[in-house]
Image 1: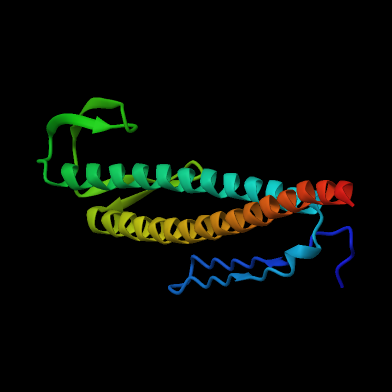
Image 2: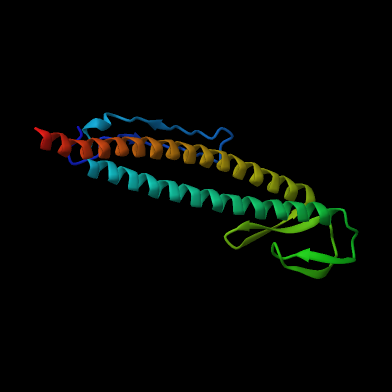
Length: 180
């Protein structure tokens, strides 16, 4: 039951992101009920909430993009370093923009940052596989975030249209009452 003080926009937004499984299960149900019964205040609140949600998801999308770029750079550096010879001096990437001269003693084993300050030693094949899987995971997350952002933009447009219509109706009502 919806109280009159609550917004009559029912949004069930269930994202079940199971990134550990191969099939990321995502359900989105968007139900929009009668906007005509909403007051201007309720519509404004819905618009503000949608704007906040959209800003959050756009920020999340940017964060995921940054993570993807970092992992892609690490994968590229791993690919480039694996073709180099042992005991050869070269520039080793410490960050995206910082390279230091170093002698590669072993081009078959690498210390990989797996996050949260943990590092694991892996051979070249396992390290390449690890980065490929992480890149695929992040690409799936990017696609899901893009879908969510698109849905939020559609909802924002719908609310804005209804809000404009309600403002026009409210502006016309006093003038029609004055003529009577």
